[in-house]
Image (cartoon, rainbow, N blue to C red; front, side, top):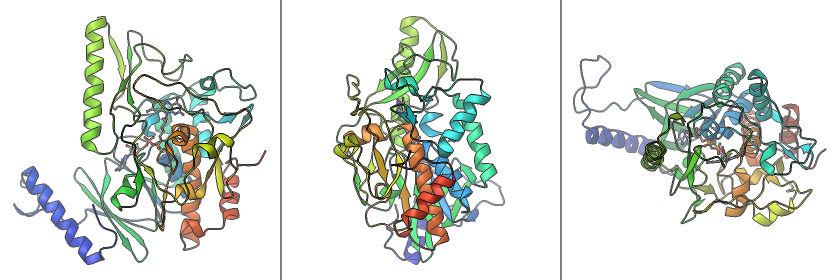
Length: 431
Ligand SMILES: Cc1cc2nc3c(=O)[nH]c(=O)nc-3n(C[C@H](O)[C@H](O)[C@H](O)COP(=O)(O)OP(=O)(O)OC[C@H]3O[C@@H](n4cnc5c(N)ncnc54)[C@H](O)[C@@H]3O)c2cc1C
């Protein structure tokens, strides 16, 4: 981890030592590859240098939208994703039923997330909910999407917008520069140095914010994660309209699942798969589908310039710097399950820009489930449509901050809102 207060020289020394130490610890064997370093000397110089304006870390639910939006708003953008595809929990985790784009009979979230969802449903020959009807159960209006198609369409949209994608990479050292940030990333066979003006942390658990030693919240006991799979009957993506997580043989809780680092994610995957194997043996049935990774409900949230409380959420507080809507019942899972708590009829919560900005930071935003919020508010804010809307707002704020050579908090709000509106988003307090 890099201390942002170290000077550039100190930072480089620090990172070189770290890499050498890691290679030595791994007992790296070097062959006849001409690009390889002499034995005992770890390579420290980057293979690739990438100069962009906006770096999005994490190409998941929020990060995909943030990257597309930043690029569409004119910023040179790259998204760094540790996995193999875009979409995060929606695709790799298999939670392919984004909600909620509507509240109380009307659409409250649109924009780039909705564009992607809608197009993936249309291409798949699926169907969209009728948002003019207030559903009996909140999940009736979640959209069933084909997660495979969504991930490919997301790539196409990034490409069309001009946002570069780098898979299998993650940051290992970050330092402030006069112009913004220097972010050293690694992937297998790749050392990439990204020089950028703005970072949007969309890792789910605010990992970049953690690397910068900025404060984050975390509960002692977090909500369980889940492993999604299919026993007995064929997986039919985008089609099953039953309650998504209520079906036997489709999911089980992974208690203690923690997305914080490779060790905890490995532990969750091993535990989740082990239980699946036990079920296959016990029920003498076929395993028809298994997601490649467990999905995670809760880890770290940022301490932002403001913190959304559950009272703000329940009362639908219209923040003076609100940049998007959010909607879902309070939805805190415990060891024994969940009992969603609906919010008062007619209420539409909002997300302020300051909840996407780590306290006392510059040139840094977050979007997604790590939004600055208390635990109960977060249990509702973490859902996918809301994460997408936050991603779009962060993408606009970052791109405008680049254009104005300032930090997101100093971008005039009316310009953020006007740009969001032009890119199809629904603004809080309108309509
Ligand atoms: C089991 C379960 C059921 C749910 N049910 C619903 C539901 O019914 N409806 C709904 O709308 N929402 C639901 N949710 C909530 C919702 O899916 C998630 O909260 C939301 O998708 C999180 O979005 P995100 O962008 O914050 O994170 P993610 O979508 O998880 O994206 C984070 C991305 O960052 C990448 N990443 C992480 N660390 C790094 C790093 N250091 N470097 C590079 N990349 C990194 C990850 O690989 C991932 O792609 C559910 C969640 C779970 C777990």
